[in-house]
Length: 227
Image (tube, rainbow, N blue to C red; front, side, top):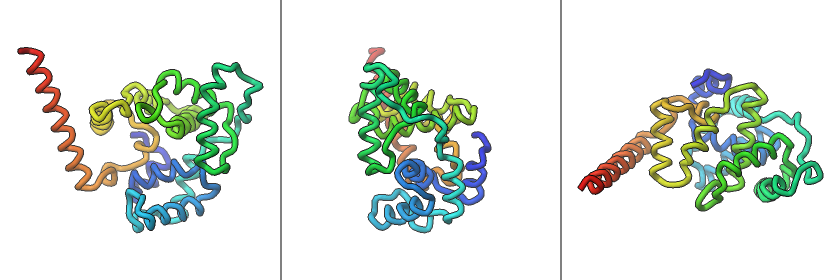
């Protein structure tokens, strides 16, 4: 894992991965770190959060995380007038989803985001529920924009797309195991956490049981094939 500024802050304050993931998701929807932290509290109160109220970091920590995760606004707004219809057909449904999800707080896509949306949709054409949702495609595109703007390797999201963990439980478990064993680099958000804060004891037990069942299934399949 790379020792980025956010990684060091997360390690020092023991920020949970689910909290970081939620902050990353909320950045385009909320205009300030204060609003993001308030939403984290509302998530807990509504029972939709994967973390507890005392897991939410201070406002200063949220501000630091947001500052490091917010993509640059150096790219001009994307427009149909500048592209062909094939590209537009891939971008427009994602744009609509972003506007709807953020309730208009994000009203346009940048040219840089649109470029990555097109690439992602071409290498991963299946859509939710069999593939990626339009919102997840947008978050991936923002991750690529952030990494390339900072001249960082994009291996994390690249290998995520290669493993296609959304296709099946087996694919998801194989991807998670490869990241956990550091056979492949994690995506940006997973790089921000610490080993001590990745999962609870219960999550670890469930993961180990799932991996055991997956390996048993592979052994049964191999045994049947050899008979």
